[in-house]
Each structure stands twice: as C-alpha cells, then as structure tokens.
Amino acid sequence: MKRTTQAAALIAAATLGAGTAVTAVVLTGEWGDSPGTTTTIVGSASPAASTTTPMSAAEIYRSTVAGVVEIKVSSTSSTPGPFGQQSQVAEGTGFEIDSKGDIATNAHVVADATSISVETNDGATHKATLVGSDATTDVAVIHIDAAASSLHPLTFGDSTALAVGDPVVAIGDPFGLANSVSAGIVSALGRTITSPDNHPIQDAIQTDAALNHGNSGGPLFNDQGEVIGITSQIYADQSTSGGNVGIGFAVPSATVERIARELISSGHASHPYLGVSMVDAQNGARIARVEAGSPAADAGLKAGDVITAIDGRSVSSSDDVVQRISAMSPGDSVTLTVQRGGSSTTIHATLGNRG
Image 1 (cartoon, one colour):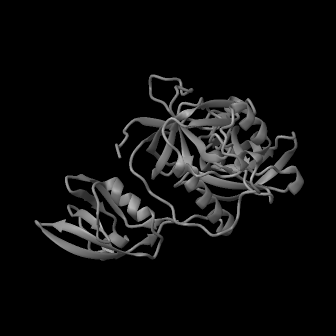
Image 2 (image 1 turned 90 degrees about the vertical axis):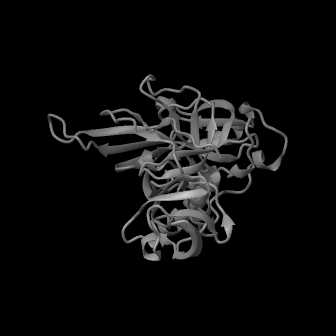
Image 3 (image 1 turned 90 degrees about the horizontal axis):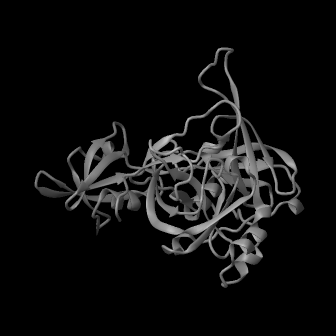
C-alpha cells in the first residue's frame, strides 16, 4: 500500500464562541483496534439496506436524515483571556446507532466538553452524556434520554466492500448549517490519517464529497444508505483557508462499529500494544525505537532489528506489521522473525493493552 505523507487537519467543530485552532496532523501508519463485544448497536435494517438497487443522493437523504443529529459542545478555553478562562461553544455532527439513545460522533468533537447538547431531526433538544471516547480512533459515543419511537438508528454497512469510484453521500452540519448533504465518490481506500492523540488510523476512506468544519462526526453513506464511515478530516495546508478542497477522510465503519461496541459495553476501548517505532526496510520493518517497559522491551527486541515475519507469515513494510498486530487482541502471543546482526532469530512477545 502506498504510504501517504500529505498534511491533513481534523474537521474541527464549527466554533461559535472563542476560537479553536484546527489541529494539524500527518498521514502515517496505523494503530488498530481490538474486537468489541457482540452488543447490537444498530437498529433494524432501514429500507435503504433492503435493496441492492443503487439509491440516488435524494433517496439516501430522505431515508437517513432523521437519524442525523446536531451536536453542540461547551468547553473552557485552555488559554485564559483578559477576563479569565473563556467559555466556547462549538458544533459538530453525530448519528443515532441504536434505539436506546446512543449516538456516534468523533472523539475530537466532544473532547474537553463541559456540557453536550443534541438536537434531533424533529427539532427536540436533549442534554447528552458521554458514554466513552477513544482518541486513538477518533470515535466517541454519547447518549440522550429519548423515546425509542422518536429515534431513527442508522445501519452500518461494510466499509471493506467499498471500491474506488463508488458513490458516497455525506450528511452533516458544516458551519452550523444543519442537515447539509453532499455527494461524491470514494477517491481512494487504505489511507492512513493521524488521530487526535497522534496514533495512526488505517484504512481511512478518502472522498471528494464536500466536507467542512462542523461535518465532524457525521455519517458517510454508501449507495444503499448504509453508514460506511464517520467524516473526520479534511486536507489542509498553509496555502488553504481550511475549507473544503475536495479531499476529505472518513474513519471506516469497520473501525467505528467495533469501537462503539466497546465504548457502550465498558466505557473505553482497548488496543493491542507492542511498543516499537518502525521504518520500512528492504525486507520488512526496521525497529527505530523500543519503548522502555513495553512488551517489545520485555521480549528482547532492540533498535535495529528488522521484523521479517509474524507468526510465520512474511511482512513487507512497517504498515504490514502494524496491520498484523492491530488485528490481534491484548494478551495475544505473537512470534516475530527478526534479522539481527546478519542472522535470523525468533522472538516471542505478549501484546499489551493500550486503552
């Protein structure tokens, strides 16, 4: 997979009060997520999911918009103003994922929130509580107390079934303009974007559907009206104003659904952890640094080692190593084939848990 090196920016919630800087990130490798529980977090299949006939953007909008919500977040500025700490209010997007009142959004939308309110499609406003947030994958779940009859949970689709060129539709609240719809295609797959806590999120979906500040946390739909991602980042650099330039990224539903399940089940997400920094090598992945006290250090891995295989299967790059490790679970044992000093050796490690 081609490694991307462009700079991107989180689609920060549209700020209504004191300003919030757009966070710059660099697209890099990946840190995966562990499987969640079997808790069902989606509602019964919507009409959109019951047909294989492609739907138009208008049809997708009509069948799904009732499940999209506007999120307003109050927080306190970390930089005091001339009159002390300043409060600020920002807006983002979310979508209903079950009939209990759970709503998925981005972790960066609700970060440092002192209060969260949700306006549902019927115009009702609800006070929301944070169920859990995972900055590593930029996924969060919030909860509102609302009658099941008033909720319209959306259905997750299979992001791994997407192909470049497939049509997609985004619904969100760019700059506070509620329920704005934009359409485009899947521009690329397998992108890697950097999470709010500087860990890579792999398999991100690149799209040219218009995304702007305030779209954060909103659903990206396939042509069946199924959620195949959360819109999270846009490409931005110093030469742009931070608005849409036709390059946006979504965290794939395969990640979102698993993490949301974990957050609902336990309030936090877990991630398999080896504890190395790597660069690509000619025949694998060279370890640049081993974190002290990490599973890698305990197993005896050293800087300069080149990982050439995991559990007997060869690897070709650092991304390949990360993909293999991230597909495992904390506590799993892994056998690493390593080139060291011109000879090959086998090292056994037990993956840790980076929650």
